[in-house]
View: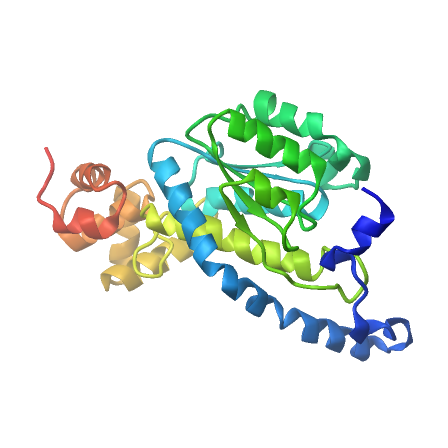
Length: 305
């Protein structure tokens, strides 16, 4: 690609409202950034049907034992890794169920390895050899430009393996559009600081990734009402949260909530079914298994033998 092609990308264009950026004081700079950030949700809104379709695909594949795999370079790669990492404590997701891969490998998480994104063959190799993408998986290629060769390589390898493919870009009509089953493209426009796509584009990507993983996990039974009932209470703060969740969901006191959690081995969903269905821990676990992990279904069913 040449300079003329790059100049046509909206994410690389100059923003006419910030041409005086270097002349503004601190309040002026952050005020302008805030004004531009306010446009992000509006950019995402037209993409909601595509995001919902992507969630349906993820849920379908995960129910069959598939994984959600993010591939990105630079900021996009780091955001994918962040989202994947947070699924473990938030939803008790096995570490292998949601994973993030970044061009340049683990070292690129904490320092810039910019040249790595240009290697399409390396992206294909990571998808094939490190991620071992298979036909039950969903691969999400995250690239603000929509043109990152490493990400395109990973997507091509994923398609060859029979995986479902999703693109998350911030430009219209990109090469990634032609590589995926669904392409989510919130067009956030020129950045306040020209070409710095860790700003609006990065924020939009983070918001969409939140939707993909959170909505998928909710559909898979990881929530009851709006409560995180599959949280892992692995420290003092999270144990206090587990007690609070159980108290609110079951309408019980702190002492009873703690006793139920201790009896369930601090499995919040198990404790909740115990409370709502008045069953023992082993019965609650059987019900949850039969209900596919959904608390409401488990409470409503007869005891499973």
